[in-house]
Length: 543
Image 1 (cartoon, rainbow, N blue to C red):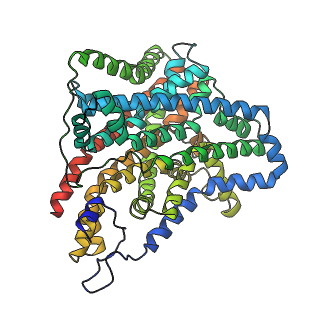
Image 2 (cartoon, rainbow, N blue to C red):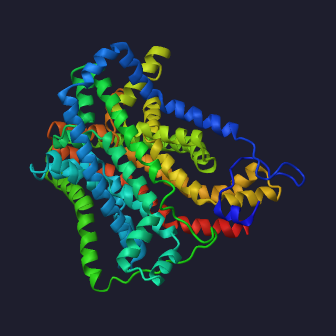
Image 3 (cartoon, helix red, strand yellow):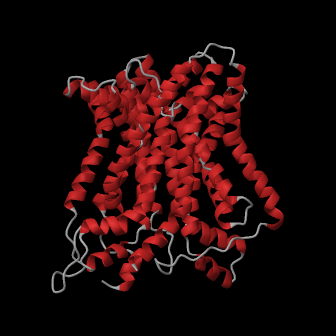
């Protein structure tokens, strides 16, 4: 093992003891078969919804499915989905990158408070944001309304990884560019943005994938996409073949989105002169731009956070004279919290082996396993719920249908990619050279994992838990299908009241969802803020 290889973290990863002197060559490593098969098992479980679609399509016949796809409706849905994804993706990239630069690279007053406030909108369900805007103004509808709502809801998915990337980037590269005559704008575009390119594209990927599966927000805004039409075909028209055909088109569209991401990997990577170097970044002074920057940040937080919360509070105050059952509110809160916490724990545990395999064992198989897990993000919750119901009825005598375990399992499948993002970020931050050094000193594999890898991965596990938790708290479509009989969650109760235009009774459930999900959103902000600190602790512990 050379020092350079250890610093660059390019040594393959395996669980096992280092080679003893006189043994096999250090470069030869035993294949992590256990880790590989565990990751394949996880990917196979996530494949169940797609298997359901393929089985239903095969039962309907290829010709019928092709005829259902080859319709003017499909073309219109494709146009609506693609143009919305393109516009929202660009806006989220600009807003997320700009706000991340302000909080990480400038002397913006109260930047730590802004870093939290800019993440909190992630805790507000998309359908609650739509409710907040649409209930105040009928002009917020259609394409423009969808762009507004989805941008304000999803830009934190770009902000979080870009902020972490800017914090970990080597400031020496910018200093060298400036010393060679590059101006501030050229340095920002070629070096700063270049270093954060992978984070920006990764965040945009998540934005588009999450948006492809959104239902509630588009239903409220009256904007027709694949998800709204699939829900209509499944639940109202009971046309299973048509719904499956549209779902397969959505899967193909997701594959195209995913295939665009690997092309950006390998360019614009965050790098340092040394893995153990954690230099402080010199912050740019805003000077006369301080007030405009504060106004822009305040306007963004006001639109993304203030309007939905203010609207819900207004309708709650306006509807206090209406009869309301406090017991149902308390009960829905308990069920929502319990289901979401269990799902978050399961998804995080399942994501750990896949993340380790993807980061430490870079190869076609590892890459394929990792990429395949993102497909579930593009599947509507209704499809995932129906797939679990189908396999339970056909192979398990309907065991588990409309029970808490099946609903929790559906949540874990739906939001597994979000858990993988958080875990993968922490695993990537842990230099592989540190593990190799510990193994070369004779430490056992479990000891290396517990004393070296765990301190670096633990923040990522917490972030993954929070990502899944806040997403499960606000999940709607799968919950409507799988929620146990006699049980209501905050999302289903809100939806029932909202559909009946009982805004005053719906508002408390919206506010509670926001309050519960705001806690993990705060933890997420702290996770990305403390990640370099944890890296420094691990370096000192092994040194």
